[in-house]
Image 1 (spheres, rainbow, N blue to C red):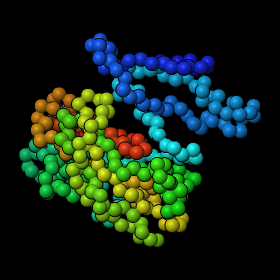
Image 2: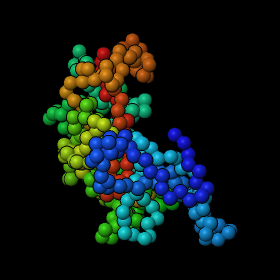
Image 3: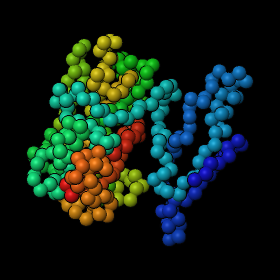
Image 4: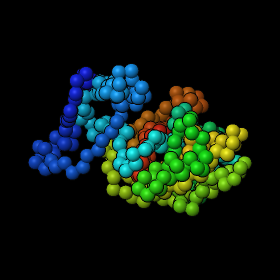
Length: 341
């Protein structure tokens, strides 16, 4: 990894990925699509009041050193650019996981992180058949969901939101209309999300039904109706080996700011206008017996992972990627699949 000296003008620094070189060697290399990103741009360096005039407003940005082009297919762009016909966009949505504990009293069964990860239970290593695989830590973030079935249809999920996470906006209904709903062809409200996951470990993803709701219809009121269904297969390539994609529904996030005493942040992790809500519930493969040896850690003492000393666990860490189909805003969700050793 190295930086390119950008004190002059870099027109293009292009390399072939490993897959590109393979295709070039086979004689079937053909560029059909391309994507643009701005991962290395710090827009706070734009100085519209530069004392030397308008020619210097973006000079620092243009001369910031940039990384050499990567050859790994999954390392090139993390924050892709989107197409939007608007010429007056001031904000773009962000995606965040919602871990608000007070949502539980409203029947929102969202899971919390434990040790920085969302835990998913594999019951195959549980000789007692008990509900809680990690002692009694469900309230601290263990997803007790394992395989698909009627008994877990409403079971824990990871809840996420998109919106304008800006502290200079409040999140009123009018701001949501102005900055997010906008007009035809310029909306920044995702109606679905793509979920990418490792098919060796996870067999599917459940997402929201279109009838689910997440709203504050009036002052002092919050209501949510979260229902889950299987995501549908989608033909999108993240560029990471063994990863596949499903599409899940999004619902309108109509949690509004009404006053300083009722700003909506009691329920939402977005500071400004809120756009969409999504949920994902990973369903682990029915047999991971050899996967723990191949891809994970086996017989780890609980004390090494913040759990009970003297109890042994097998676990595999993986990442789920969730991306808005319209805005392409992305969030990474760290998952730990765990069982008794």
